[in-house]
Structures are given as structure tokens and as C-alpha cells.
Amino acid sequence: MGPVAAAKVPPPPPAGFTLVEVLVVLVILALAAGAAVFALRGDDRDRAAREAQRFAGALEHAAARAQARAETLGASADGDAWRFWRRDPGSGRWMPVADDDVLATRALSPPLSVTPLHYAGQPVDVGTIVPLRPTGRNEPFAFVLAGGDARIVLAADPLNRIAVVPAAAP
Image: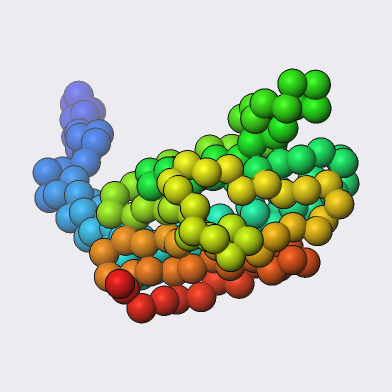
């Protein structure tokens, strides 16, 4: 018998992805990212409503904390952000609350803004600290959150319940 002919083995397919496969994946990712941005962006009214609910929850939490810990807390708003304060019993000075993530300073992205509206029936200036007493008996107060064509009033009653009410733009 003669020499046995070696069987030809086909070469292995090249490793990796083809250019077409990579481009298809990139197109799918771009479409998904565009849909996510569109869904999350929302309009000014949606963003204002979410921020108003977040601020209302923080105000209620602060009022409950003031009672539970027998400390005087306060809330302020200066247009760009809202802040929570604790009154130092020794000096009587307001100090930023630093030990509670819910009461951390919250900066708003434009076009949203938040300002105090009134306290105890009287108008108040931007940046005024609205106190939340340890007794739980607080004067009614309100803040307004606005942005674009949205305007929402957060009004607190003496029992520390916060009503979030869409309001007509001025």
C-alpha cells in the first residue's frame, strides 16, 4: 500500500465578532439608551411633582424626628436647594443636620426652584428657617416648588401633615 493521504482538516473559524454583529449591538444599545432618556426625562411638571413629594416626605420626617428626639429642627429654602437645621440647645444657633440622609441638603436642577411662602400666616423671606418644635405643635407654613410651567405648594397644618397642591402660576 502506498502512503496514506492526510485528511484535510478545515481551519477553525476566526475568533471574535464580525463588524456587522458589532454594529447591530451598537444600534440596539443606542435605541435603548434613547428610550431610557426619553422615559426618565419627563416634563417639568413630572419633575416638580417628584421633588415636591420628596420634600414633603422630608418635612414630615423632620417633624417626627423633632418630636422623637425632643429637639428643635428647622427647614429652609433658598431657591436652588432646601436644607434642614438643628437648633443647638446650648448656643441657640442653627446648625445643619448632618446625621440623617433624609434631611441632607437637596440641590435642585434648573429650572426647578423652591422658596418659602409663609409661616404662621405671614410671608417670609427666602432662606428663612421654619422651625419644627419638639412638642409637635407647629405653626402652619408653606413652601412653593416651581419650574417651567409647574407650581406646587407644600402646605403644613398644625398637626404636621403636608399637603402637596398644584397651584396656578402667578
